[in-house]
Length: 292
Image (cartoon, rainbow, N blue to C red):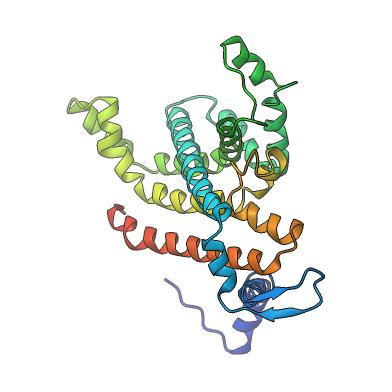
């Protein structure tokens, strides 16, 4: 690796300055403000602020609504991650086997990633709308009465599908790149030895895809916990009866709608710590099973 030596010691810092400034303004400063606000409580008019220590955190752990949002977030994050990665892997395998029109199918499959999360949420809201949507009509023909406005299971299904659909394109690109990086000679040698397609996939392809799978696992969990706010807001707004009220949406609702800034800040601190802990666990324990 070639090492670059700067004669002027100030130049490296000037080159890094834009990124450091953006990181400080949009991450470090808001994170520090959230941590500070989590120990404070304001009166109903926002005039007086009182230091309350860990009282905001104690109230959260005694709140049934917050404990429900923890459970909903776990179900939602696991469902979105499994669905988006599973479908993306199947599509990548199908495209990897294609000889012609590979670029056309790849381009068509990547398009959803360019759609904004709020637009994706509205799109799926129209598709599953109980009054005018095509899916409730088709499900009604099969004898199922779809209504995500009043049914908790339908609401969770809707937000999981909308969120996973947005992320499938991203996962698809990485899985396809990983599949195309696997030497064809390995799978051909296994085929000559009599291994079928399923055994070749689990014995050769999937182990060699483990670095890509591990990377996407971390990215998808972070996406499900942080970047799905717009989908929830555009489709169910946390309802019905808190059935889709994930942690990041509850942070927004309590802070900007309920004006309970101390509780909202405490929730954001817990959410940030939870994602950091999951990432450390994944890199500390799950990464050991990854074959590079």
